[in-house]
Image 1 (cartoon, helix red, strand yellow):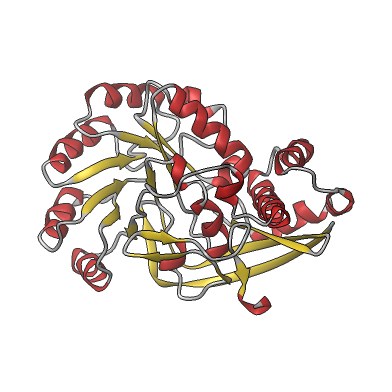
Image 2 (cartoon, one colour):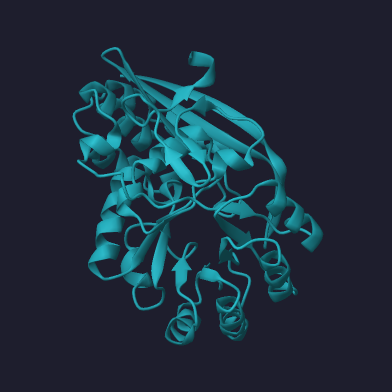
Length: 339
């Protein structure tokens, strides 16, 4: 097997702001695995909240290059199990390798990845489009320039209810709210009650990830479903979230890829929780991989390529929230400079 690494730094269409930071560029790392004349692509993103940088990711992967390149891919799951002990402290790097392995494996079978799993894509959920924190006027302008059936609204300001009230005047679309850990119990419950009347579907991670007692209180009293994000990172967190959240948002980069994500989905469904996958502002490489999980999901946030001013690849297309798969085997992603 041959391993190639492609670092990117892509600009956002607009400054992207959440409750704890703003950024204008998104550093990304694309991984390519080549074997038997086939190529598989995977992707991971840098993230300051989890102290991940692209140079760190490249160093981590290069440290185990000889073992990776000596591997003869049998199944992606076996590949993941072999690599996990080496990357258990860097799930972001493991994710990129796992996605590439799944893409390569499906291509060798001559099938789209969802076909490998025998899934029906006829009832896939629509993806939302994210409106980052800004002035109310700018948030309205962003909404108007990008008509969409579902919006995720980033909040965590002193004027959160006012923001949703103002945005609601300009669209009948479904709203989802993401506070990125910015609120406390009282604020969450107050906002949930107000937002329910304003057409908000659910609230994502309203409180700090470590506040499990507070989340238990919110879970019991909230007028809206609460979805875990920062509180749900790896597989063992699913059990922790049960009884504290109504659902979980699985980020492939955080949990280590598709292999553990499918197990997390199964476990969450088993205990009656809703399941979502989310974006870490990946380009079309990572987004194309997420798309193949859609038949398993209740909700999806895979708008990364829509938020970026440039892209790394072609692959899935997103039209009015609907995901259109590329007419290629694997995940469908193809690096633009390799077309």
